Length: 172
Image 1 (cartoon, helix red, strand yellow):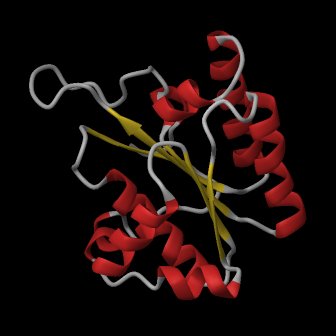
Image 2: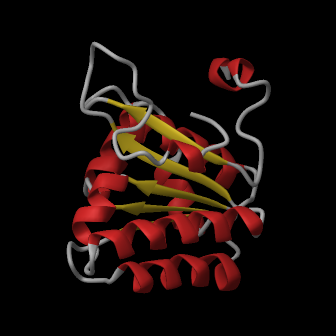
């Protein structure tokens, strides 16, 4: 509730939010809060995990009181661990668009963008272009997108993202 107050009611539907920071600050947990809120409102949500297991996310969610298990069991929250190198960036984008179009997903979290770049098959520039295309497509469809982005620095010059994806974001 305090975060929603800080954001003026929460994340606006159909926007792209980048949750960034160094390892261990709670980026995935924060994103999961937004997914759970969306799913609890009856808006199907989906998390695509590139950097941690579903079991880890379930455990952390339970430990902070999120109704993760109930939302997954009801079908309001879809969680998919993406096996490294199992999909091309195009195949992943197709899977996400299919979940949006056929399963009614309205909020998508990609956790995290570095894992996406490392785990999808294909040329680096193709993967980045495909991520940008996917995010723009989802935004145009009115889907709320949460990108989890690890930054490399804890101190020093502020950089909201390490991989220059901040131009995609409505919120950081």
